[in-house]
Image (cartoon, rainbow, N blue to C red):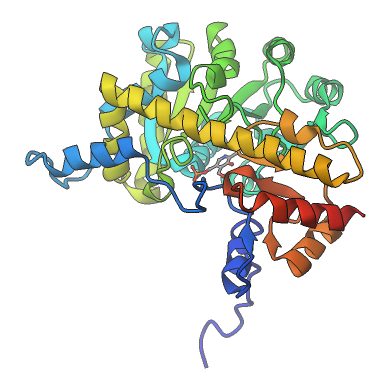
Length: 401
Ligand code: PLP
């Protein structure tokens, strides 16, 4: 018998498992609204033209080799990534107070940041919003932190529970870590307003809470890279410290290239140097050093004016298509006279809509309409097209009536 005979079958990942189930369904009308990946109006994955161009340049450059990157990744990529999120005129960057390391997309950046905090930070508790991306609690727990939640979403208004949020952060122990979605909160699509961000910032700074930003959707929420970074920049402008996990999966469509960055904004340049030296000790025994291809694509785009501009245009087109799907779905439900207030569909932003449908309604829609989504009622707007909206609206209508 196998020495592993006792190993039990693990459950599918709650998000990625949706795609597994979708792939098994032979129905021609099936729609996958589970996974957070952009699809074109034709329902196809999209490789940005600017990414293809950058890749061509890389392939045609005979000086490019496949040597190992340093433990911290591609230096040029790290600099450009910090500029992208903190702003090119950021004092923290100018004062060399930011330690940035290339990591394996957003998830890897979160994990490296977590392991660093578990080793070197005095407070081991991280507060995460309720709800949040399903992988967050697992990454933080396995990385050595203990997880608590703060109130975030109000199911009645389908908006932000700012009162509950502020109360919960007020009663967190001084020094606690707080996970903040930089923009386009996943799964709710509900973000604080700038005024609310300012309230959150003031409270967190007054209590010495440490912000850990997760930025997986910069540019995807509003279509503007700068607008989507405003929350983060408010926290950096006050001179305080924070962590930042950045992903290029969505905004450059580089999902499978696994390219992202962890930045730690420090009080002073000498602290940043020591922090970086310790990040290397986290990374080296985990995966030695990060992959070269995706980071080279990102660096090529970010450093070239024309390519950067082309990227912003393509990024805005993705964001706009998502926004138009919101309007189309809202209009379709209204046309059907579907009971309930569906205005949250057009108010929420980013890749997802938190529909308010419960798990029974979701199960019904999957069984009867072959629509696949996570059981919390989250749908990926990026997976919709003008052809599939009517089918989804029919399904929602049937599920709630
Ligand atoms: N953080 C949030 C909120 C996300 O939604 C995602 C992806 O769905 C990630 C992080 C990490 O994605 P990746 O590791 O592919 O960059």
